[in-house]
Length: 121
Image (cartoon, rainbow, N blue to C red; front, side, top):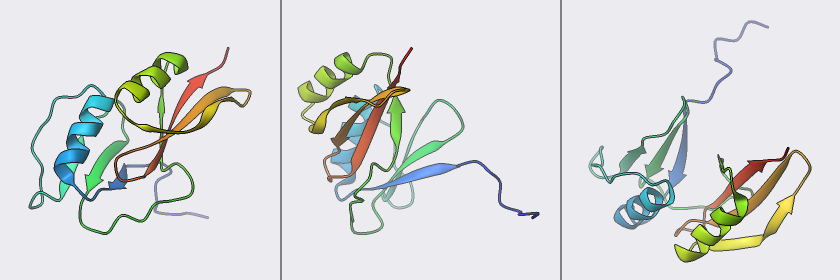
C-alpha cells in the first residue's frame, strides 16, 4: 500500500475545561514557563522535547478515556510519584513493573488519565 499518511504523531490534544488551571498544572508538571494561549484562549501549546507536541484544547467538552491518553518518560518513578503527590495529582493505582518499563497512572485536573514510564534495565 502507498499511504500518503506519515507514520509519526504530530501532536496529542488534551481536552481541558479551565484553560488557566490546566496551563498552571501542566507547566508545574513539566517544569515549563507559562506562555500565552492562542485561538481566542482555547489552545495552548506546551513546548515539548522531541517532535511530538502536546496541546491543551478548550474547544470541546471533556470526555475522559478509560486509558491514558499519553505517557511521559521519567528516570526516577519513585521521585515522580512523590512529586505528583506533592502537586496534588490524583494517583490511579500503584507503581507497576510490567517488565520492560515501570509505570504509574495519574489524572490531570480534568480527570484525563496520564502515565509516566521508567525504562527498566
